[in-house]
Length: 543
Image 1: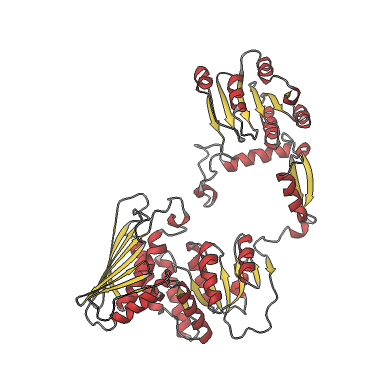
Image 2: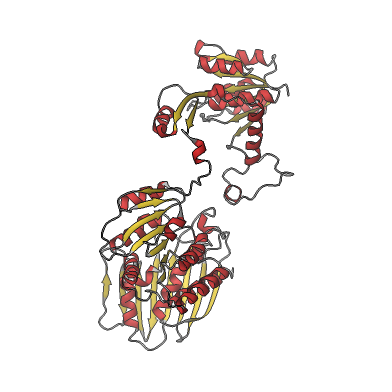
């Protein structure tokens, strides 16, 4: 109350700042080059300095503060120059405050801050909670007794001020556009035409008041009159892996790509147009309930997999779910029970997890070689997985399940496939680290074979990412990065090298499409999917 504050830059944010300061009882001095904006600031109760007329802002601030120096400067300008920061320091009294809300150069003078012991802060938009996924995505609020003004509570305060007229945004609206003319509105934002607040108006908001934004569908191209026996695929999820690997593989396998669903809508439309889908939607239930969809492909975040799999089983769809199948034992039990019930009723359709490594050409060659050996085998799988930031969604136990369930399951399945025998015992040892994603797994198989998986997040990129070694009957097989296979002591096998890496993604998708088309058994036996998923979840939870 009663403090003297300078606002540098009277754009949309600056003029809102003027009103907020005035409502707190502050005296405000606004600086800008635009005479129209200066006039609006005066209407809001600020004194002003017209920089375009050559006025001296330092002298004005000295007079405004009655010779003491201002208590604070809030910089809401957008400039590459560091001059606003230098001026702010000169305007302030001893131990004054400077807050940068806009964008300005930050070549600060130590003398400016040292002599006056100034406080400088860069403002993070909205307040505590901003950019915190636990707060913004999961709704984990901060206790009001400890954090009074969070992002949400700041919004509440602003809405209260709008409701009683303490914040007046009417004078700040410089342009109005129909929402159908949004491109023209953005042209004003990015262009040179003077503007403040640009309002997008809906022509008939009442007609859409009760319509969920998820209940939207866009037809991309007409439904074909003939399907030529192609299995009809619906996909939920249009992220990087789906658009970069999975969808191209399904397209190459000869599937009819009918629907793609994405929560935001934009990614689904981009993917739909690129790969020739017939429609895109933000409503996953539309894809699940479409009687034309033979097979559902699930490529969403891991925490949604179990729910979609259960719904797809109930809907009688064939299912391809990008690994993992689920994140928790309870989910696995529910999926197993639902699928077995369908199978006992004679209505089970193929269910497959994207364990593509077992479909790689070199892995198939190794399996064929091992089938001629009756002795137990010893497998060593070394995965130079690399580091993933702790704040990445895959590291979140509730969303991604962690990297062991989310990725290391690939290699548990690979050894299960090559051993050709059930996993009887599994033990995991984790290296102490914040991420907990560097570990070794020891597997014991029913035929006496053993396997070790080294999953390392602390290696170097220059080292090969995936290496498999198989020891048996006095012989050794070595597979490097799914590109080069070498045999040691193996009659007739000198080596095999591919032109490019092949981890089996296309063969995996092709096997699924064929199973749906022919109505045959799933390419990966259901009991193996459940077995590998159970071992993966147990290993992840043993940390």
